[in-house]
Length: 314
Picture 1: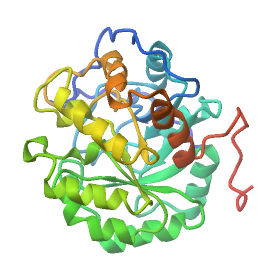
Picture 2: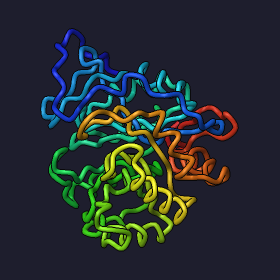
Picture 3: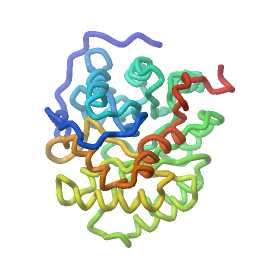
């Protein structure tokens, strides 16, 4: 692994990137063993892992130790760390976190134009099990089909999840693309649908149709992002509960910590955990959402088995 670059100045955070909640409550909900935060990020410290020069936002530093402390506080023992666009395809900060995770962490990468197959195989051995495609204009220009096919060619044979970050009506716009992707696809953050459009919106109809394929999964993270009501986000919680009930075997949940590119203050992650009593009120469904489904989607070891390399790449 390449040594981190040292002695870089810490840049000021962008508007919309507040610090994490200063004192998240301890959840009343006791989570099942091996519960997973299936969507979170690690940022910095910038002096060690500098942000990409071409980034469109600068977050507050939220290093791996801070994330680990939050997970211990919340009762989460597994996590999927998603590489952020502010780090681009420089995966040193992700690798550093995965290397310290003792097999309890998985990663989702951002594959750049110059990312080689050898680098991708190294990421796989470190615990990466997916790649992200960003379609939101505040993060990057949407990838072309040629760019997507180039990524697919380089990750072929690894069984990685294609993770798509789309917003609202784009679910319908990109439905043909999503259906054409090989293997499993995960849609981020409740597809960032516009709740004001109601349960019969084109976005939700398309999302349910995609879930019906059996190859598309949904992250019911980001309740604070899609809510029109603010905490405790009753409208978004109702939407998440309906979608978990619709596809109980293909939904996973995450905090989205430390909550970048949002309006207002960062949500209380303890509250987000307690809202799971409404999102998945049945214990079996809660276990599926937090344990069984992320283990299936992101290839977590069963019964504390050690992390094993892909059989094609010992």
